[in-house]
Image 1 (cartoon, rainbow, N blue to C red):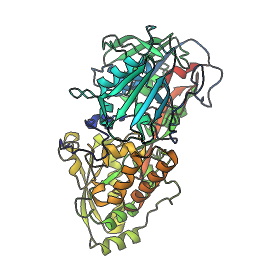
Image 2 (image 1 turned 30 degrees about the vertical axis):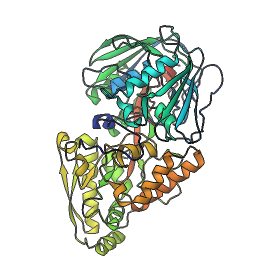
Image 3 (image 1 turned 45 degrees about the horizontal axis):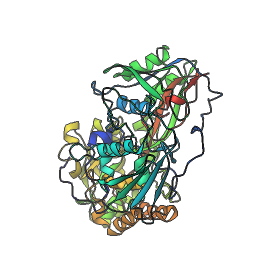
Image 4 (image 1 turned 135 degrees about the horizontal axis):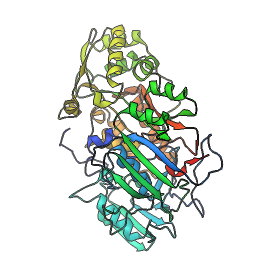
Length: 537
């Protein structure tokens, strides 16, 4: 990964995320609904979440055990730097954000009841809900909010969300009263509310101590055995819905087979990240079922527009026409995925969903390549197991399909350290994995000048696209901003540098004794670690 991070023209980030943070799921950012100029309160009382079809009247009691993947073995509880799954899952139990995401990706109030911008989205006033308490009974105040964001953007040790908060300086935060903070940005940022909903934008006490992780989340940490399990107990001061169980245990499994065996033996009640074969096994076992959710995460083929032959838009168009998408999903992912149409952020309200689904057309691909002077092209496709399960298989499927267009593709399987090393943003033709974001936040990470993961350099080939995206960041009006996103996405569809052939399908296994599971589109778990909503029937 290159260390050459140029100053971004839109001013959205100051420090890059590590590729590990992107690969492990990245930041959770809203992508589902238009954002009102003010995120207003939902009313008094506790916030509720729509229940799953398996839900009934929630019951109290029981000890819930969930199997998750293992982490580094040294998983920390830093609420502002959640990289591996155990840390991410724990973060959702212990902490909350000013704004949040509903399971269907709507930006909703969290600890704050409103976030209101000025006319050009350079000043945002955020007001906390009244009477919100930390788990030890102390109230959440504006001082805690300012401390939390100062810790996030600390230039000596910037945390994950700092990459999206380059427009915010310590001097840009002011306490107006105990419940109100004014954020003043150096440039307009119409999606500031989405950044406040990122999973690492957690609010902690101004005297936060990592050895005693006190937060406002639904649970409190009871015990922790590194690399093995975490045990939580309910937070009696929790401000929202649940929790319903008396105890929650997150058990770590390095072996996915062991994780499923633990589920089917009754040792645990739920597990995530089933592979395609395990879905069938779980579904055929009495008393168990698979829970699946369509995610906007995707595994693109990336075409570097600074490198021939991809400097020619006709070649990029031809390569998109080579792909027979559903057979690739069937062969590489066992059929568990959903069709991509060469545009990312499918849950963004500006996503151009009315554009026709691209189909394989080998004759047109041949014609475009011949017109561009690349008939009989030979090329290397760089990939790695580190990209994700099925990535190498997908590359091999592409190589086979490309023969029909007269293209000879040599699949180069790279070691993870090589693939994501110094060459990462310089590969001519490669694959990658992206987690879950909305359109504009994606651009800050991989498409705009100075983006830390600018692997295709698309903006250099299309100044019109760049101007549209920069205008969208300056546009607080939802309707107008969504229209700009649609315009940018349409350019991606016609001229872009990614082959987005499929999106993920998240797959969990669970005991049918459980109720309250919800479909959550933005995590590595189909139910999004929302254990506080789960109960025993």
